[in-house]
Amino acid sequence: MSLHKISNLILKCSVFCIWALPVSAYSQEDVFKKLQTLAIEAEDGDTLFIPAGKFSFNRSLSIDGKKNMVVMGAGTDKTILSFKNQLDGAEGLKVNQCDGIELIGFTIQDAKGDCIKILNSSDVYMKSVKTEWIGKPSKKNGAYGIYPVGCRGVIIDSCIAIGASDAGIYVGQSYDVKVTNCLAKFNVAGIEIENCVNAEVYNNIATQNTGGVLVFDMPELPLKRGRDIKVYNNHIFDNNYTNFAPKGNIVGEVPPGTGVMVLASENIEIYNNRIIGNRTAPVGIISYYISERKYNDSLYNPFSYRVSIHDNEIVKSAKGPSKQTRVGLLIWFKFKKNIPAILYDGIIDPNMNAGGPEGNENFICIGNNSDNSFSNLDAANGFKNLSRDPKPFLCKNKNE
Image (cartoon, rainbow, N blue to C red; front, side):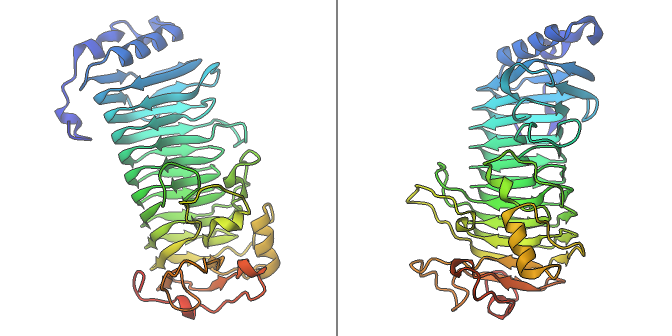
């Protein structure tokens, strides 16, 4: 079945006719049982329609091993599945080993863990789906709103993610990813791409998160060398919210006021974005070593390499850096309110032989941004030779 061509779906009566009576005639437990039973019994190509209403469930819904299945609600704020009183399961909706799964037009709230987790699936399409935790953002909220992992062919379009204690929209260890037209707010990380290959993040809004858009590559994961990622045409503004990640989580080290951060990733292009009002690090390029965490992974490359930042509108906040995190304190100590638009930790591998010019061995490229102010922190040498000279890093086009 071709993705997102709803007009061509064959809607089977066995799926659509379960609510022959008004929804109010069924208990919440009845609705859960009917949904879960249909998800289990659905044949390839079926559509599971969830009507308008707010349904409270105390355990996870799951979909396993289906092909070309559609789960469709009546609309983002019309079909609401609440897991506020969840007792069993870590996710609101868990999808596993599906080929051609479409999730369209519904909201999942207050899951104990992740709102929507999609594992080991291909041709994943999400449209007009909302995940949220109601109330003030809290470390007690689940880690991820939308969370595909180990997938191939992921499209997340026109979705909303609010209140995740890690990332609102997170795609990890996946190939061929597109995140577009989405809104992420009041998360620790608005949108995070981690250990992915060939990903595009474009036409999104990330605001009021701790960090707007993160492109990370982490050690000790099955998919190595996150690379070939483009972040463009996004509005990434006022991401200054207090970091509320649980203790020990690496995103807990992201300072409030981060616009875009690249960590240990390769062949990254950040362009045509509006990066405005992020008070601590409008754009940051760092290695894994800046975290001071140990790892045991001989295949891991901890350095950011071939990162191009060009043609962005970058407007700094007048407030000065947040002092909540260790990194934020460092930036405050070094720059006070005169922060650079682009921060680079300057850590390179002396054995890497990357071939870049002296002082820019990792091929960091900046050019044509509205603000090209820059700092090489020289973090490997205790910040002794911090430099604000952008010349070794200036280029007209990507990786020139």
